[in-house]
Length: 183
Image 1 (spheres, rainbow, N blue to C red):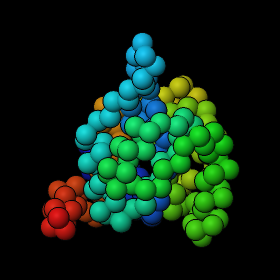
Image 2: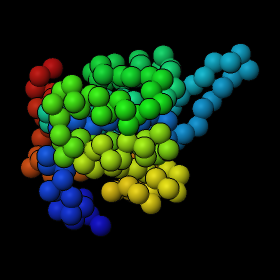
Image 3: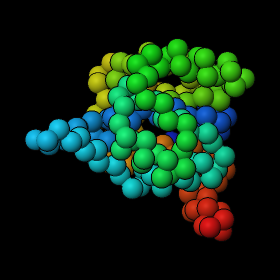
Image 4: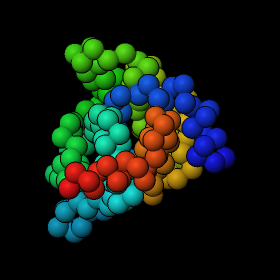
């Protein structure tokens, strides 16, 4: 199915999204952790996903990172992308989203989440649209509103970013032009 067909199917929900919560491991990464003999943990990110986040921000969305694990590399990566709402060690994502939306006067239809495991699925009733990846656990895929074609860590985030941007009547190319004009 083409991007246009996906966008048409989800336009009613996606064009109202103002805020999206992203998990990290399994979404921005393939879920693997590389740990060296001297206990250094390495995390690999996809640059297309990063550009997707920049473009989504350019389109006016607020992006929040919610991860159960703390990692200085994760914080650095998202700060480099201009995302400053990075919350680590958040296992109770449902409670976090509920409190955040209340504090910021957000309603369910304005919220989306992308996750791949049980702590993410627990928040599904707090958001209007829940996205996941083909590498998510089965119960998450069974309950998600949308499963990307691409795997986590391999462009899945970019796929969602492009889809939301398109649903808002824009394009990634246009948002990129706006982004570079500001630089």
